[in-house]
Length: 262
Image (cartoon, rainbow, N blue to C red; front, side, top):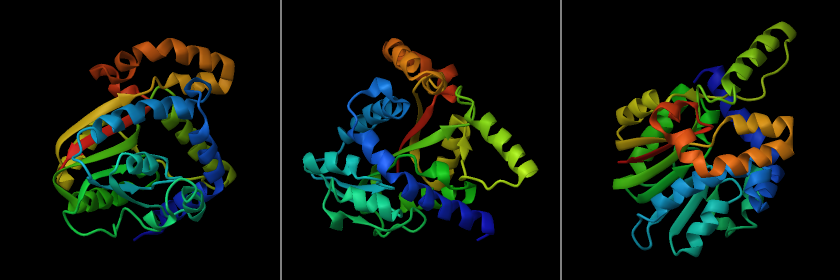
């Protein structure tokens, strides 16, 4: 393992320790239009719910990077058996406000504490974006290992060419760091729908499908003016499927979603 891999893993945990309270507050918010976080998660949640609807009664579920436990709580309310792993101590502390503390443990997608072929549904929301290419490949293999034959995997990733300009901004920040010597905040792994599907098939998944979610420029509008961002979000809501998941536009969406089966 090289120093960059160690750093990206450590920083991912540290960043979530630092921002845990903010995540908790976002999940408690009830207006999806006044927050680009909640607006984007609304569409992730819709795709996630469709996966959950396909699960058998009492299915076993694993939440990788469960954060504050919001999705776990929903599965428990529906009678599913769910456990979560979360390497951030602050996130685990807050998760205990939503789900029984013994259902969440410290852990990593690189070595899941789960037997082979034992899980019906594995999901990892905004996890792989913080890990590098080699760690992502290892994590995908681990998910294949623990899923039952035909089991469902749901994951989110960062689109390389999203129209919010995040990758370009990251490149500018990298250039600035080289000039000023400022520290990196965290690693971001960018993907394209086609290359990511190829990587997942190589890891052992089948029936891999990519989806786009959230019209990415809304993030920029929210930063410029929260009021303008909220108004624009209300206008785009009815057209989101076309704006972010229509084939030619999928690589430019704010979120990249993968749904696959073992």
